[in-house]
Image 1 (tube, rainbow, N blue to C red):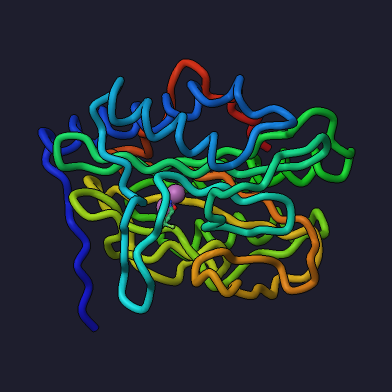
Image 2 (cartoon, rainbow, N blue to C red):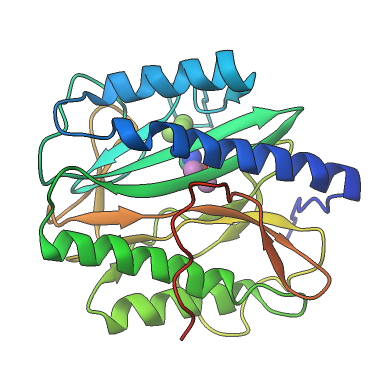
Length: 267
Ligand code: MF3
Ligand code: CO
Ligand code: CO
């Protein structure tokens, strides 16, 4: 079995910190614009211009074309309501009560930072709010596991147990990923699994954790645009993402910034 995990040097870690903070700052910048009446294309354009003109970062999604995919046509992903991930910005107008995930990946000085948050558009239902908050908590349950000697399966187990105890389901087909000079590197970071399974974590590894949690069943479908993923039962779906570093004694979250939402309480 081959794996191409890269271990970052202290110089590379410093660059990952910069890229991670910048990705999070794009979300800080766009937050006041996520209001009823705006289109997802307008959000894409605002983020694109901020990245390119203000930050001097490269929007990694634009023209990204992994094997088996047509080039991604926008600079961010906007996944609304029952869209799970990889929603393509377009003419859709956000309306009161929608929930939307904005997923930002920037490249700065050759390194990637990847992070996403959920946004509530206007007044949202209690069920929608709860799904968004609980998915944020699920992400942090996974993050808090990260330390040398832990296994990838410990992360997936923690997320799955928390989400399923709340009555939700975990999407299986998409996972977190190693990240660095490449957008998607080894290892795959599953959001479900068994304790003690999978690769052992070691200092210098950088990867994302990005659970997709559905209010209904776990099954998904891909739309005809070749990218957008939706829940098969059209139930609401939420996702949050951070890029993390394995340190000598635990973890460092690389995608935090002044506008990051409060970290959920442990427990
Ligand atoms: N940012 C996504 C992730 O978290 C990947 C998006 S790929 C794209 O891995 F091409 F759709 F942008
Ligand atoms: Co990612
Ligand atoms: Co992402």
